[in-house]
Length: 107
View (cartoon, rainbow, N blue to C red):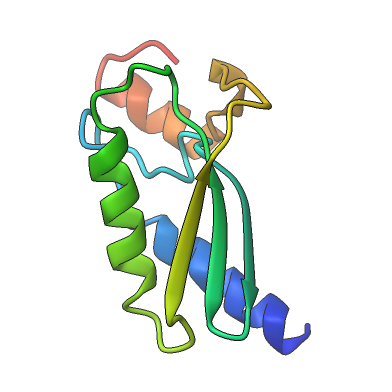
């Protein structure tokens, strides 16, 4: 594994700690992180949302930025909101589905 891959893997793990403010599922588990790349201290994140009118958009972006900036190899976080691909329930990871079922939420 290259140094870049090692840092990126650690950043993906860090993002598992960032939860959707409406339900206790990580942004990774919800499938909101479309892509992540790290290069020389800069993290580029492509982020989508379940709906264009999501009231938590700013909160989620702030939480992502705050969490990633805690990592030693991160100096800057750039977030791009993308709508392609369009988010669907199919993007929810299986472990998140199990949590949702336990909460009585159909996934």
